[in-house]
Length: 293
Image (cartoon, rainbow, N blue to C red; front, side):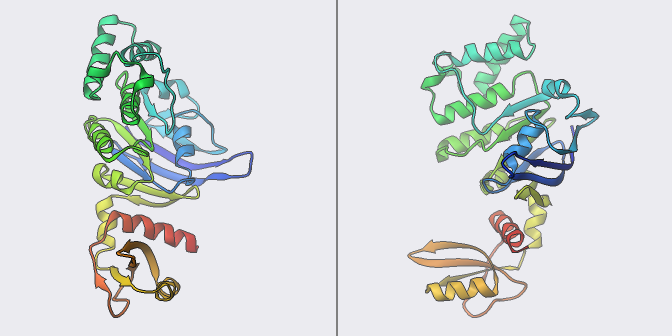
């Protein structure tokens, strides 16, 4: 299914402009939505998920008008918000059974088969009878994706799903997302660049409610080929001089010294070495350009 977002704007009562005339097309794939905290990602996700209305704009899921026919959208939607609560004393299997009924799966045999399959898919089968309040953060996230997958949704939204997970749980969760069928539209909203690099054939970057880039990660990387340069800087004065004269993408501490990455069409000068571009470079370069405007 194709999701088409046109001219979406949202300003909250406190004056924060969360979305500013944002337009975006999401095809039938795993789509990465990158942006820093406060970029408007969660506002966009909640709006697509029919949990709030924009001030202006349109959203269509194929022929469905998302803002006008919310019931039709919810029948096709699986949603894992950035923060979600669980009933701590209820087991995972009981909660999934309850949510399945709410999703309209009233046939007991069908419901049992679906719940059992999801518990196995999310590697929660052995803990299915344990109270959700005893689950670790990673287990709760896997339960979250299990409930999002109930009733075979065609549009799945996951908002910051790996934030706060340790490396092992993050890998488990990303493997789980990658196992979702190819006939489903999945929007992965995150500020973690590696999540998008590992999973998504298409992506967009937003900041301050505006679209900065949309396309394939491979194309964005190719556009920076031969234009990323690295150097270890010994003093803060040299670092400030580089910041003033070049497009500084990022800095990393290496043995107490600053290792800088710079965007330039040709060598910025002595000591700089050309390095392979990364999706982090794409991300930080677009944020840097946006901040300069």
